[in-house]
Image (cartoon, rainbow, N blue to C red; front, side, top):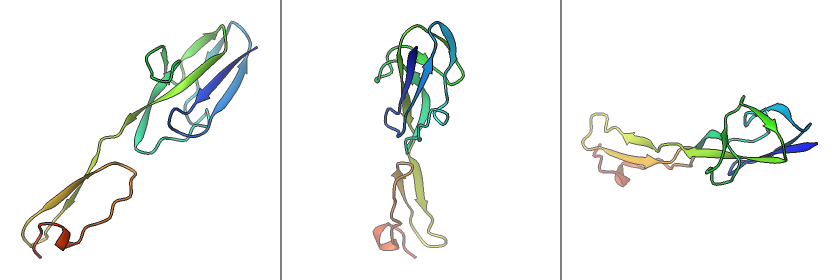
Length: 116
């Protein structure tokens, strides 16, 4: 018997499956592998090494299992979001670039270049 271990690679959770040698195994999605998503990132694939430089697998891929295997979640940072302040009849403008899923405190008019 071999084990397939899913490592969250920045997310949380994990899963371990037991499979018979030389059998076809279908790679799980992060949800099916009990991996919670990594805030501010999107899942791209699984890889056989933590830095993503070896063999990559997508959920649904079939793998012939010949040894124990650990699959590491690979994540890509989401692009920043632009928060734009509209003077709504006043003068000036302001904007901030913000990382997704982070706490952002709304600025007052005095903290921006907006004249109401």
